[in-house]
Length: 251
Image (cartoon, rainbow, N blue to C red; front, side, top):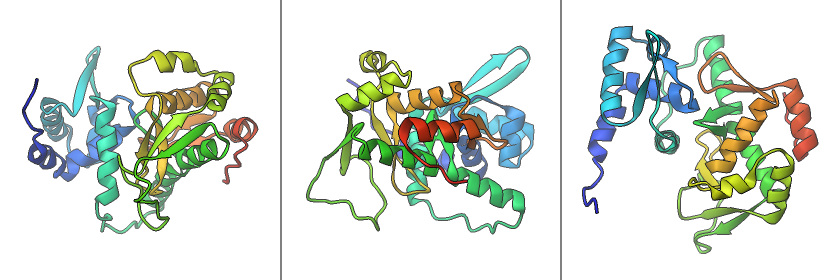
């Protein structure tokens, strides 16, 4: 049995660098990115980015992949993305003013719909989670009924709720083209949640959340944006979400 304790201070030191934090955020959509792309995201040179990435790889935050002469990096596991999303809940707002239309558009796009490693986040992800609960596809179980859930408080991890897939949900998601039986047999939890940093509510994670996002992409309901993590619901996707789950997505 491993009796060593996590080195929280070391992890905090790695995240204390704004450049490393920006690169980790860019990798939070689960896709591998080239060093040059990560350098541009962090606002540093490629050699400097390579040094930062070496530190992150040594700590187990990221891992490198080689494709010919090119080297790409991705997050080492979904747990890293979950930790970053959770840290964003308590992080103070960025004091840097948004002064360009491009930065303003990117900020709005991230809040509207983005990927959190391999599942959907932002207002789109939260809307889907809420609808699944309203329609009885998921069931919420209060872990601590005495704590309650106030609308003026951010959602929290671990003590307020657990979510379960219902028989109705199994039928609906199977009809949507997701192999729910395979998810149940897998090692990954079928239903988990993340606390959405922009909405302060829960969005769907776990194996089901990943399968749902993959299905959306396969149906051309989603496309990646220019910026890392940003995804856009296509016109086909808006119609599809409305027909399949009775959700109207505003422009």
